[in-house]
Length: 159
Image 1 (cartoon, rainbow, N blue to C red):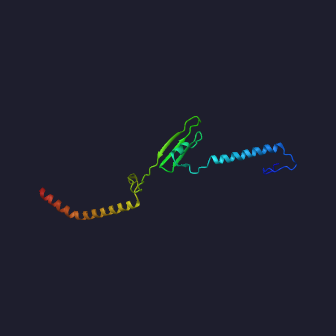
Image 2 (image 1 turned 120 degrees about the vertical axis):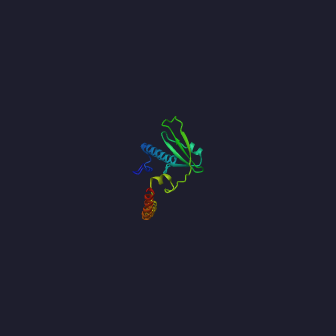
């Protein structure tokens, strides 16, 4: 007999209905199928599958119409294995080398310097401009006397 929770217990009448045995067989088959499915396909959270070698990545099964990215733990490589939509298609396998690039800071990048100015750069430019204005004022105050002398000399030479 089977109770409401799906557990089987013996029928003490000495006879087991034929339907209960069929139900138990279906239940056992369903449990076995669920266990094999959970073992076959581990859940990948990150999107990258870590492998030890290129051979392991090549041997990894890929479902039709899917693509999987692998990260080699022993070498600086990533692999992408793609399977076509037809099961008769051969999978494509690509290998990419990982290269670390040094990224210069925002101040050192020439493109960024040409497009944007930092606040500190603007303050330095303002101070330099003020210094140039002051120097120009001081020179223009001295020039009128020199200009007057030069103008008088030019007039004298012209006569």
